[in-house]
Structure formats: structure tokens, C-alpha cells
Image (cartoon, rainbow, N blue to C red; front, side, top):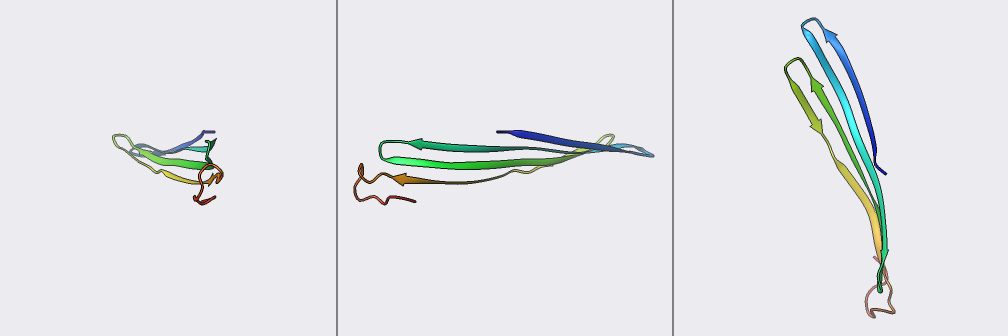
Amino acid sequence: MPSRWQRTGGVSQAAGFWNLSFRGQGALASFSGKDAAVSLEGDATTALPGAEWRAERWRAGAPLSHSWGNGGYIVIPKFIPGIPTSS
């Protein structure tokens, strides 16, 4: 299920105004499936944080991304003889 968050703050300066924002999004997905000879399942998670700085005439930002996951499969030996039964 995707989720989003955002935090924004600003500070007034004598010469102008600047703003700093933090944003992010994340997702978690699970999967599973079964065919005649193979059963598989797993999950994957993704995080997408970022920051943005804005001044009177300038804007700069940096996004990041990281994903990680876990999964496996099982071969049902009665359908395919000679193949290992797990990963």
C-alpha cells in the first residue's frame, strides 16, 4: 500500500525568503503465484525520500530511491524429476 508524507518550513531573512521542503513516498508489495510445477512468493519495499530548497530566484533539490525485497520458490518434484525442491 503506497504512503506519502511531506514536511515544509520557511524562514524569513532580511534580503528575502527561503523555503526547505522534505517529501517522501513508500510502497510495500507482496506477490505469490503457483504454476503446475513451481510455487513462488515474496515481497518488495521501496522508499523515495527527497528534499528541496527554494530561495527568491533559486531552487535545488535531491531525490533518493532505495528498494529491497525478499522472495523464493519451490519446485514441486512430482512434475519435474531431478530438479531441486527449494531455492
